[in-house]
Image 1 (cartoon, rainbow, N blue to C red):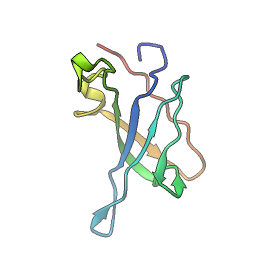
Image 2: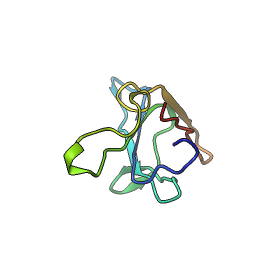
Image 3: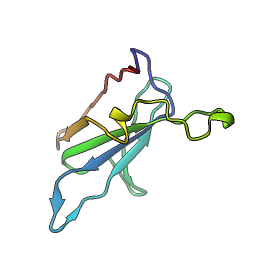
Image 4: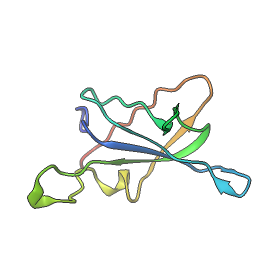
Length: 100
C-alpha cells in the first residue's frame, strides 16, 4: 500500500460468474513479507476458479485497543472496487493500493 508491501493482509477472490444456479467458491490467501500471495481454493487445491472475480483485501490492526479497526480503505474490502480475471495459463495479479 502506498508503494510498500502490505504484510499479513487477507486477499479474497470472489467469483462473479455462476456454475448452474450457484456461485463458485471463493479463494483466499495471506500476504507475505514482500506483499506476494498464493491463493488457496480449498484444503486440497491451490489457485482460484477461472473467470471474473471481485477482490477484497482486509488488514486489521494488531493493537488490542483498536480491535477490529480496518487498516485498508473500504474501497478495497467492504465496498471493493477491485476486480481480477483469472485465466487458465497462470496468473500474477498485483494491486496498487492507496491509503487515501
